Length: 90
Image (cartoon, rainbow, N blue to C red):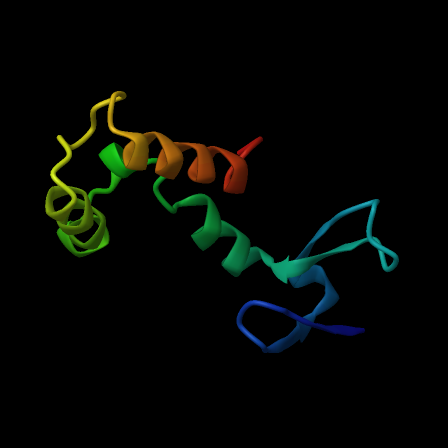
């Protein structure tokens, strides 16, 4: 049996998907490889290891005149909240 991964758009064997009881077919919508990549994404701006991941956000914050990684910075606080919401329970 095969299933389509919604992230990489490839058709893979059903065993390439994690079991997810809430799903109608009892399998995750993303394949194991895509799930693994998703879990490796940085959880906040400080943890971004690669400069190209962090550069854009830092440039925007600096252009707005804010100190980077400061909880008094409303843009940084909003960004952290979005990340927390997007990556909750991971």
